[in-house]
Amino acid sequence: MTKSMQILIMGVTVVSMLFGQWQIPVKLYPTSEDSVYYPKLYFGQAVGASDSFDPFIDELAPPPPMFGFYAYFQGDSISGLIKDFRANIDTGIAVLNLWQLRFRDEAGESVWVVWDADSFPYSLSFPRFFKFIVSDSIPNDIMWGTATSITATESIFVPVEKSVFFRYRDWTRIFEPPNLPQNPYIEIIPNPFNSSCRISLVGVANADIAIVDVNGRLVDKVFVKGSVNFYPHSLPGGMYFAIIKGSNYTKPIIYVK
View: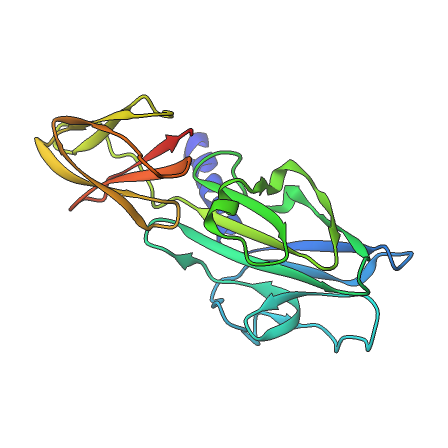
């Protein structure tokens, strides 16, 4: 076995380990206490996990105290998870996870939430990323479009009245096929764009193009014969995907509004 082959196999093994199963420790420093809150909480992904409570994977925290600070991951109807592992939710376009870290304490208190950013199995660029939002309700799609990258900081200061939402997205289903005539693909110029772009087909005379948002929802349809100008009309700025109907080809589109 050559050295390059060994390196390749090692790389595949590392990627498999990172994205197959992982857990992230979270430390909590509430303002109502002088020391770190124990135990540590964990969230992540485990092989065989489902979106509901898994007694052999997730772990329940001890019963919460009658009063004072208490932190927990909200998992379905189960509160107080020490380890909350969620299965990937496959939207057909992206794979994602969502965790909600909640707190209990007297109103007006707050807490430092600290995680180890280096522990995340993230890529600094497309197609994988982590984001978080501090909110008092589950963030909508627009909020996630402007959320903060998990790699931007290793701690945040959060009022106990709010929750921290962590989201992991995996876009590895999106790929660029070889630029060969027998494989139809799309050229988009310019990309990113801020008013309109020109969508051109290569390898096929005409096709229906579906435009979907980051959650896989259809937002527009375009019939392309050779090429056509695309105007996003009332769509908000952000990332979208152009999909050739009847194929596995998908092309990211960045609309800067």
